[in-house]
Image (cartoon, rainbow, N blue to C red):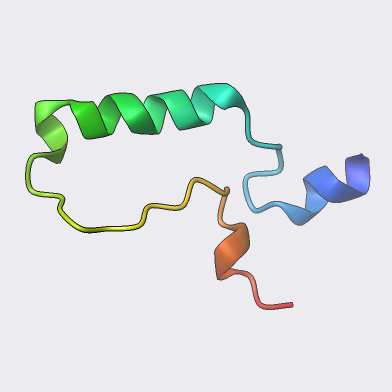
Length: 50
């Protein structure tokens, strides 16, 4: 588990709260100019080249 956590850029695993926060943001007025995007809540793992 420590090795898995160490491999993530934020040095922690994602939790349901992370997804909930993104959902709340998207439902708020703060995201009113965001359209047609795929937002990955993966702690930066999709940006790491393996």
